Length: 182
Ligand code: AP5
Image 1 (cartoon, rainbow, N blue to C red):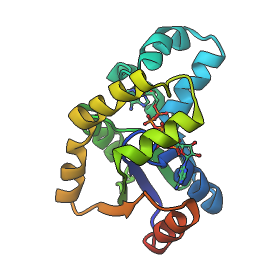
Image 2 (cartoon, rainbow, N blue to C red; image 1 turned 90 degrees about the vertical axis):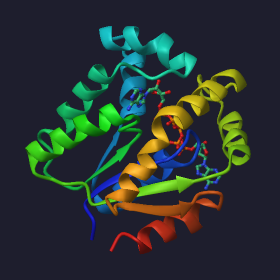
Image 3 (cartoon, rainbow, N blue to C red; image 1 turned 60 degrees about the vertical axis):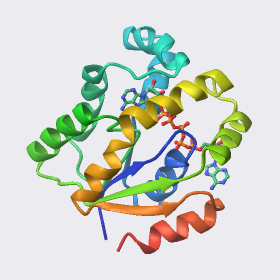
Image 4 (cartoon, helix red, strand yellow; image 1 turned 135 degrees about the vertical axis):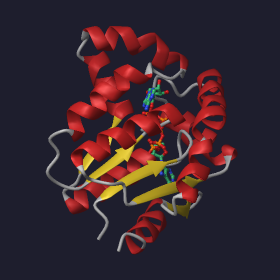
């Protein structure tokens, strides 16, 4: 059973949903950088104040700030973990590689949630989070295509990538992921 996982995919692909289900079922740590950053905003911390406008515009938060969060959570992890929303560019990939080398816990599988733009836009509009309006979704999607999509090839070259058709219903996707975990 794989213990060190990563979910990759565009906004609205279901990374958070599937990572939450899988981490709960296996008692793994679910590390969502988006969730952790939103919590900082909710708590009105200095970091929250720094990132609020950036996130509301759908832009990426500074690499160093996000790395701090990742390090803090992975440094002392003593169970399986699932990364969701990190890394998002090649510089974050390199930082993650350093962190994982240091804790001696190599990434074992990258689930790429493959979904059409049409379906993801519908899902996000329906959810209605603060950054789920048409203009911000456009920005998030463009940034995803420009900076995150190249990671698909990167992880594919390392033979870590597993393609999941994410256009389907939640339970079918979960079952598919579970069957590929072994
Ligand atoms: P983040 O929180 O990571 O948002 P995202 O990548 O845009 O992803 P979403 O949460 O929108 O989608 P998801 O794929 O998790 O889908 P979900 O399961 O929620 O990041 C937010 C912001 O934080 C970024 O824009 C950036 O500013 C900052 N940030 C975060 N990480 C960063 C990093 N590493 N570097 C720099 N900045 C960073 O599902 C979406 C909806 O669809 C839900 O309502 C769900 O119920 C529904 N749904 C899910 N699956 C299905 C299904 N199969 N069928 C029908 N509905 C479904």
